[in-house]
Amino acid sequence: FGGMRSAAQVISYEIPAGVAVMVPILMAGTLSMQGIIRAQGPWPWQWFIFTNPFALVAFVIFFTAQLAEGNRTPFDLPEADSELVAGYLSEYSGFRFAFYFLVEFGNLWVMAAVAATLFLGGWQVPGTTQATFDAARGAGPLPGVAWWGLQVASMAIFAVKVFAVLNLIVWIRWTLPRIRVDQMMTLCWKYLVPFAFGCLVFTLFWQVGVGARPQLEMISGG
Image 1 (cartoon, one colour):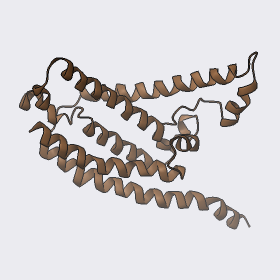
Image 2 (cartoon, rainbow, N blue to C red; image 1 turned 30 degrees about the vertical axis):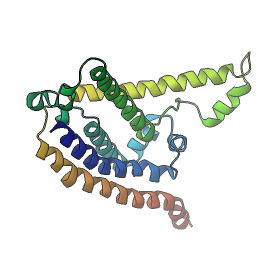
Image 3 (cartoon, rainbow, N blue to C red; image 1 turned 180 degrees about the horizontal axis):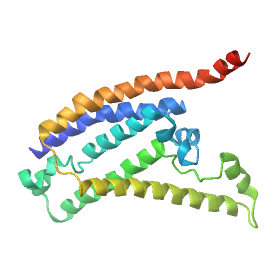
Image 4 (spheres, one colour; image 1 turned 90 degrees about the vertical axis):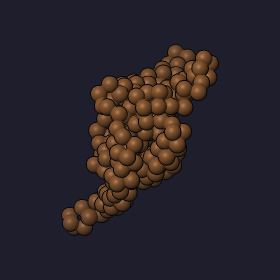
């Protein structure tokens, strides 16, 4: 039962997650993760999640779908201890049991890192630009010392964002109860999938409108 639930859950929630990822890709105009980060600014009001209202909805959809794919509460139905006594994990013990949990927590880190990259500005340090990093390569008492300092700062900024998303996951785990299997599938196919496609379509119009704004202002000003 746990394996069947896990298969249905992962296959179903891949669709809204994949469609939601297309929103920041359209906003950045590239599939490169570095390009998506550079398309955002270092300050919070320049992140995709705040510059486009449909990106905010896409972030919620992506985050919810990733919770389901990672078997986290309230979507931990494949290992529901109240029904299946840990599900497929009841077949393992010791080293294999520990590895399952290690992989699950590693999946949480990857999920939070992808969310921070696509919607929360990634590793960008407030008050700096790419030109700042390029100029820092030859600055300082030793060649590249300032550049390495910026690298450490960007890594720390990224880690803080990832830990913030992880804290949100833990907060949800201790707040929301587990839902039923039919509620999980209904949430995916009746709500997340249509809303994800809606965000994709409206983001296309949003990008066209934002791109056409300078031309419209020039015409109206003339």
